[in-house]
Image: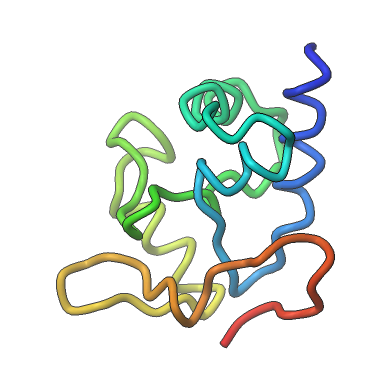
Length: 108
């Protein structure tokens, strides 16, 4: 496993229930701001138990249909944690975006 993937997994492990983070923000915090696709690939190969469902696209849309058994499953998982959605189906990022491990904020 690469050092970058290790950093990605450690960051994702820290995203609290009720919060989400974007692929790009994880990439930036892991030290490679232009590596959002690599973060996506790391999520595809993530170890069991990692809260990958909390990582979403930068516009608040959910992951591809191949993950979690489909977007509906990911949405259900997030809703169970208190994540709210905008009328167009995107996560309300203003309310739920996790700013990173240095911040105590868990949700809005």
